[in-house]
Length: 131
Image (tube, rainbow, N blue to C red; front, side, top):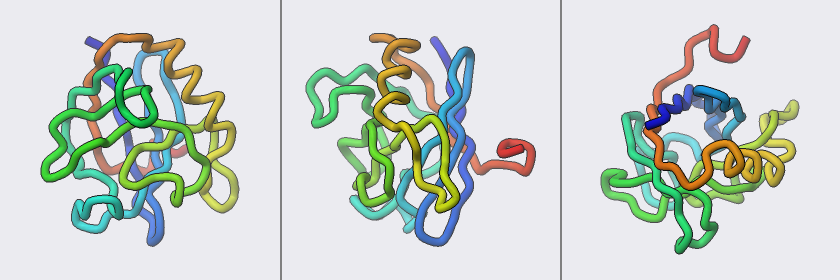
């Protein structure tokens, strides 16, 4: 099973990251860390199974068994307001740390990963992750 790492940088009003693994590299945008509060916070660091989602709201990929949370999905969106606790993906970040080309990125993610499940390892970024 493919393993993807999400290295996060926690900012005051948002969380940005790099999602990477074999053949994958996207920028991410999430809500800030607010103690895992539903609809307002990014999810806790840790290791999760992610399954192809063909029944959820966005129908891309759903993060499984997030403590005290449900309906956590990967999907398109350029601004933190486009997420209620989900993980947004893009091709890059602009000066304001918002995503660019998010629709292209989520479609590329589906092309690369397909219907396969994967393991998501979420951790804090170190200085080398964003260089």
